[in-house]
Image 1 (tube, rainbow, N blue to C red):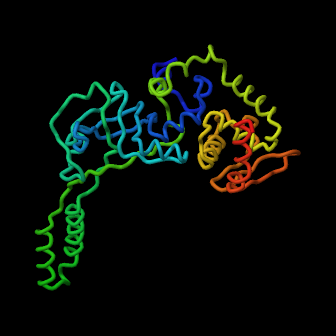
Image 2 (spheres, rainbow, N blue to C red):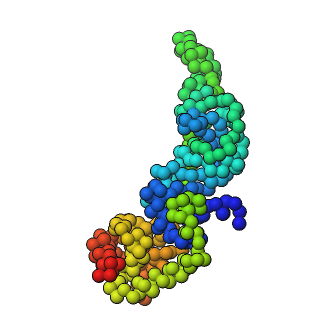
Image 3 (cartoon, helix red, strand yellow):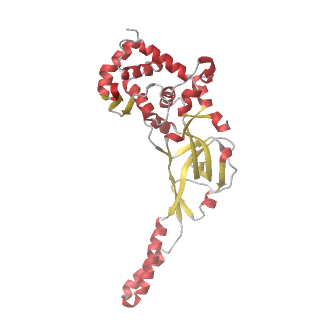
Length: 323
């Protein structure tokens, strides 16, 4: 197993390699107690100075980053791709092509942020970085290029133009000479759910070392079987969606209706992941408004969120409390 694999886990590996569920992890991320990381490969990122405002170098990077809390929380609410303007580089040993701004972009004269050109050594520890640096022509360069094009056209028509028009064009060309200057801006990088990772050290810091001791406490499959047996012995919970909600409430007893719904929905919509709540994989589709699942004879059944909240969930809570 590589060093990266030992230090970071994919979300789909959580239930296999720890005593946690993905629901436990996402709840901690949403509460901003557990950082969320991502594996990226990007070029021409910007390295911030300690002030978090000034770009001190440009570099390429392939390795792990820690996402800002706002981006991590957004992933906890929806597993859609997110854009990221700033991130923390966690593995500086994987930094390449470290160079000054002027070395990377020799034509740059302007930027939408502060930057320095003094050569410095790459950091040895984690540091803050921006998204990808993009260079584009400055406004004066664009005007100058337009003037140069107009000059070429007027030169071909010089015999048909009046002196006043020719003089105005000459004055314009002198005022806006052709330039080749560029302006720097920051382009956000896109993070998809497949990029997401959780640092093992962060899991231990938040949940304790015992979450990694699978052999002592049994496998996730055994836990799932135990839960299914327990639910099967709850006579009031014959509804399949109620049984799934029961599994969520066992690990999150104080969770509200929308939280329970979103935990199940996130699990269902995560392609290829082992289902911890919907252990029999009966749910076919789940949105913010409704859930569709397979019933007897593979018949499709649909339930609206309001029905889940007002009818199903109260029964589940009573069953959980032994009422």
